[in-house]
Length: 90
Image 1 (cartoon, rainbow, N blue to C red):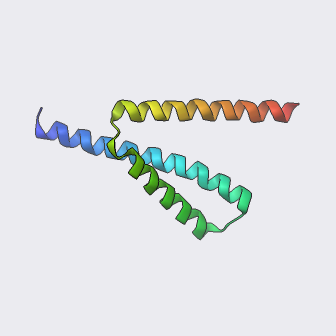
Image 2: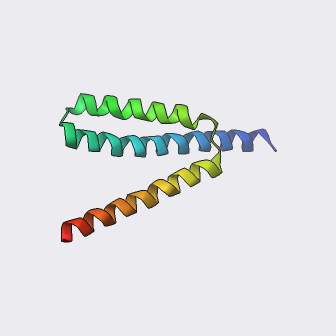
């Protein structure tokens, strides 16, 4: 493979990891803010800390593993949404 393709692949994988980590961290920070009622500084601190932790955990993951994790998280989010809508209607 050419060096340009390898560089593009590394950059796109790193960007996907950062976006996945930010999405997961954003949800966790929002849940924490709703339960604990901390301010914006703590929200940003939690967001950055959890993103960095997920980046550390996902250090050796490739595209397929990352897609699988993202898919499972989306399915879990839909199930949680359906549960909340169902519990609210009861």
